[in-house]
Amino acid sequence: MIVISLLFFLILLGAALYRRYYPVKHIPCLPVEEVPDGLLLLDLRDYNESNGSIFGQALHIPVAYLKRHARDIPRKPLHIIVQDDIEKNVGIRLLRRYGYEVKSYSITACDCQERGRTSRWNITKRSKTA
Image 1: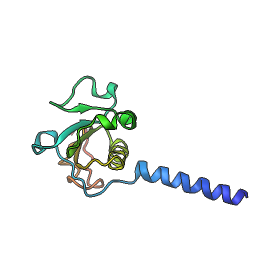
Image 2: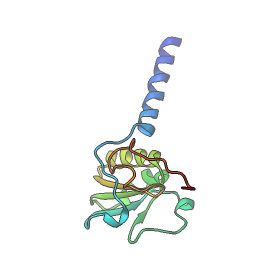
Image 3: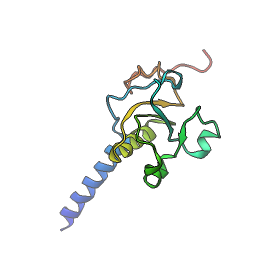
Image 4: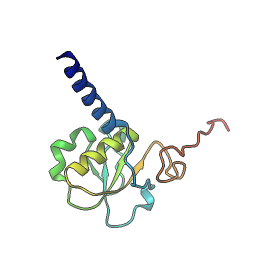
């Protein structure tokens, strides 16, 4: 019985870690200025992270409130604005679960040019003093 419960716990832990940390693939990183027309901007950052700076006509719903306010998002292709990779992964997976199509994303903490637009591993570290 203990082995079965331990196995069940490990499966749940693995699923939670996958949803949070495993990168979502085939969605390009675009700067907000290069987002094509027709995509709805959805800002998924927390209220204290955005500090009132909402990009243009972006709809602002933090990731923590997506389950509650998913029906308030218009049924259009989305471009999401997030603070970090974890917010991106969780947000895209939740939006897909509710039937939304995420076409691209922007991370405010980094430049998409440095990320290679699609790869998480192409980040080049630069010195702040150089």
